Every structure is written in structure tokens, then in C-alpha cells.
Image 1 (cartoon, helix red, strand yellow):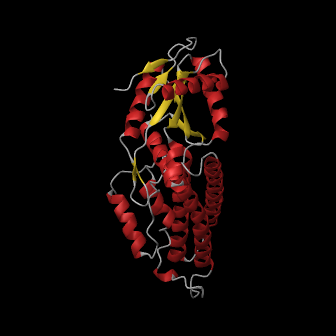
Image 2 (image 1 turned 135 degrees about the vertical axis):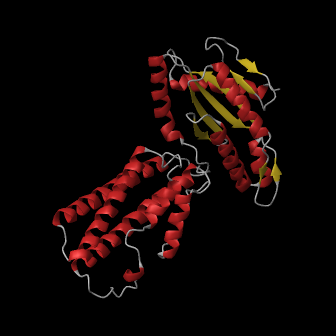
Image 3 (image 1 turned 60 degrees about the vertical axis):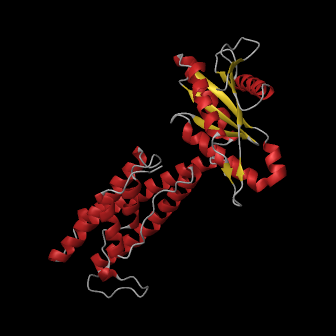
Length: 337
């Protein structure tokens, strides 16, 4: 999420947007990954429409500099041709983790070059009445590149959204097996340990039966948010099914895995869920984990984690159990403190 304070550049950009009639851009939503991806897709779609309109406006000024404004209500004379909502939005959000990536920065660079070409063309036309054909061709190429990059990014974010569970914002089960198989191959190739954990909410059926499925959905969303915000940056959380989540923990032996999972268990226990009618619902989770190994398929490793989870449930719930040795018949317990 983007939690930095607005810089001087951000404030200047926002001020320019206000003076030129642009709607104030918004920061990427802090409601979860699915919301953030939705907001980015919306901004990319608006950027296409905005810059198509700008190109038409720029071309009209180049070809018909003395013509009156069109009758569609656009106040060309009082609008700054080089300010735009997309540029202001990018300035505010450029440090967000979903936007702070090479493809988005490349789009911003092309966007800047496009506006600079338009600026030089319009200034030259105003200065001597001529249109530089080479600069005009450059502007057209940069516009084409900008639109193509936006389309590629839209496809990428739509693909990412299709991998996300719409209720919880975690990755869905459809993408899970492919990711886990790739992680297992990496573990075998490098020898760096990786673990899989299953997180199951305790007494979840009782929540649905007593307070309704809407309250149950709120609990799932709340716990999913805790899991995503308290795992390490390179861990991935999946909606495994019902009230169960799966976490992939790369670069973690079972000691490190148990430490991460115990922290998650404590945070869940300490975070009662507040429903829309102000009910405070206590929630706990039982967690089982197993290491990825060369001798077991992903499905078999998940089965071992599930057996450890069952042991946690049988042991009283609200605890973590891990398989320290994949050949042991009985899982070792990470006792709750």
C-alpha cells in the first residue's frame, strides 16, 4: 500500500489539476490487492480515453489554430494542454508496490515523452506558424507506443485479477498448483528450503450458523487481510477452500516456518472481527505445515500439512503444528505460549 506522505511534487501536481479543471486523482485503494488492481485498471482505461481526446485537441490546434473551440463544451483556451489526470495519478501512486515496477515506469516515461513532443509542436506552431513534420511523426509514434503499453498492462492486471479470489483478495486455488509446482522445482534445484502451511479457522461453521453467512464473509475477509499483511513480502496466500487458506513460504526451514506461523496465529487471536452491526467476534486459527521435498509431489506435501493441521485441531485448536522431519510418523508440535 502507498503509506507515504504527499511530497511537494504531489501537492504541486494536485494543485495544477485543480486549476486546470481536472478531477483530483486518487491514490490506489487500501482495501486489498483486488481493490488496488481494480483501481489501476480503471485508471489505465481512463488514460486511454483521456489521451485520445488530447491527441484530437493537439491536432486541432496544429491544423486549425485560429478556429473556435468545438461545441462539445471543452474549454480549450483555459485548459493546460500538458496537464492530465494520468500524470497526476502516477505521481501520487508511483511508490505503490503494484505500480513501482519496470513496465509501469516505462509507461510513465513514454507518457512524459508524448507530452513533451506535443509541447514542442504547439510551441513551434505558435512561434512561427510551422509544424515540424519530424516532431509530428515522433509524437505519433510515442502516442502509438503509449496506447500499446497501456493495453499490455491492462491485460496483465486483468490476468492478475483472474487469479484472485473475489471475496478475500487472496490468490485462488486455480493458480495455486502451478505456483507450488514451480516453487518445488526451485527448491529441488537450489536446495533452499520451502514450506507449505494450511490455516483453518476454528469453529467457523458456528459463526455462519449463529450470525449468518454475511458475518462469515466478513470474518474471512478480515483473516485474509491479516494473513496477507503479516506474512513476509515473498510469501503467497491462497484461498484453499471454505474457511481454509494455504500459505507458501519460500526460503524457510521448519524452524523459520513455525516462527512465522506462530506470529500469524497470535495476530488472528488478538484481532476480533467487527461486523456491520458492531458485533465483536473472536476468531482463532489452527495451522499445520510441512516442508517441500524432492520425494513428494505437491499434493502429497499438502496432505502432510493437512495431517499436521488435523493434529493441531485434535490438540485443542488455536495452535501450530509442523512436520520437522518428513519421514516422521508423528508431527512435532510448536506449543502455544
